[in-house]
Image 1 (cartoon, rainbow, N blue to C red):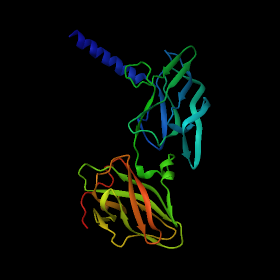
Image 2: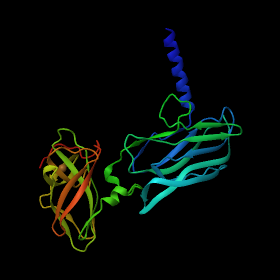
Image 3: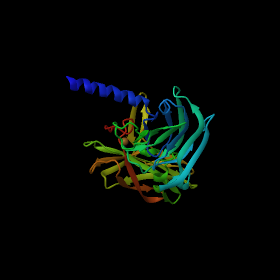
Image 4: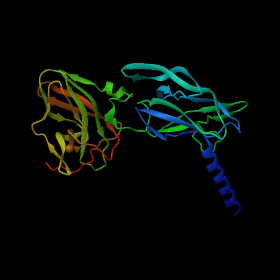
Length: 320
Ligand SMILES: [Cu+2]
């Protein structure tokens, strides 16, 4: 009985402590995407007012821009990245590694938020954590939130962010454009980028393939066929709303790629359909595909397999 009471007391103490920690409002962020992070400061240092807040930027979070705050002086510390990043076509090898807001007067009984923006590196692992150690400085003491062990038992856990996989098809437009750049294939007047697929279920008979094809030339082209070692055959499909029902059909005549236009193969629209999968698709692997265009000829591309997405290419029936 005594043990039970002790356990209950410990539990309530832990719950109280968790409420009083400096934490990030955002619980997770998408790999390869730009995100806003909000550091929440719920109290001072043992009753004293906070005059300085410092947050450190971990490896894997780059292109950081802090938000200025009225009444506080903003400073940053820069340093080298272990990994370089491509940001708007420019290689970044260094950037902001710490942000400091100073000269403020945040009373112990008050609450405030400190905001930065940055991007999660495209090379980070889904399910991993990023820790942002933070320190509040007061007149005579500090409140440290610097423990990056991930333990819930420590009194000073660092603010943390869980990393989640994004939609692998949206490499363009994001700041993590590395995959996008690396996957550019040119053939004659055609530019093919952002090839991706989705992980399949164990007994799923077919999988989808997606990419963006741009015809930079002055003559129309047409995607007429595709083959892959990953499946018995590859068809070119179209998905369309037919009344309230999403239907798909094979484009037996191929997919036109008009001169000067960009055609997207994407979930819910045009796509490649891998029929009779050899081994199924596993997240992280690359699928080889040979595309045949009327004008540009045979073009080898690779599709990166991303996570399964419930909203995506989940259809199992082929009514063609
Ligand atoms: Cu299909």
